[in-house]
View (cartoon, rainbow, N blue to C red):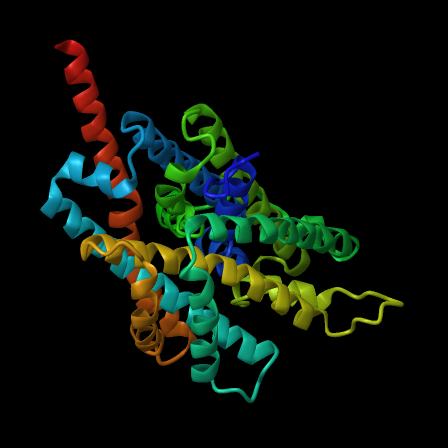
Length: 368
């Protein structure tokens, strides 16, 4: 019988998929169409490849430093003060992600479901709802991801089945007509739609297969591949349905695609409302690990055993951050830009630095 304080490989896969897929699945097709046109699938694939590299590095860190958690490893590799500086940036990054998710969710729910409800009310409601699960340990959050994961897969399959009859495949043509100079920016935009895999930094020490690193690597990489396939499917469906120029004008084409679906004979007419309800669950599964990570960082910085002690005090910080943008456009320009810069430091530079230092120490010991 598996111990309740461990996370299975299946739960890790579900945790990664449910954490990564958030606002990106709604807005990514539009971003890729604007950035690089019909060839938006190329940066999506490249973004997935770079994410796989990051996931591999994170897994190798725990192979180099067995039986230690992220904080013990970081301080051993970088020293206390340098590592504390990095994880403080990591904390701010998580706060910005939480604020962005809360505000985006509130704006979309207001637009499609609760038009008369002030966004401030929706934001605080979502934060409070997430607070309950974020106070739990990573094992509980892993089980949440495990249950949300099949909902995501089934929803995508249904979307494919009911969208196929009405799409025009010629809208996806021509291909390989993009400006190569625009590719790096497109890849960067795509890459940040995969961010969320860093939850592995907190989950791997509790994995039941933590002593079988190759299995965790395969599980983690398979999760990123699944997300990549989902993003590609949604991009091709929206591009084929609307064509390039129409797709470039729609901020959330996935929602528009769902509204186009006609189910003759079905009693469900407001399908976009059902889709928003499902997506709200997905965002909830994205917010919980992010909130949990922020709490774990603070508890470590202040040497407090229970991370739940910091969850409730963070509510006003997230709420204030989420209200900084004055409109939907500023969510991307202010919070989105902040997340991108802090994410490069927290998700890319920090794990890579720890890995390289650890690798150097291992090789130096081998030479001695």
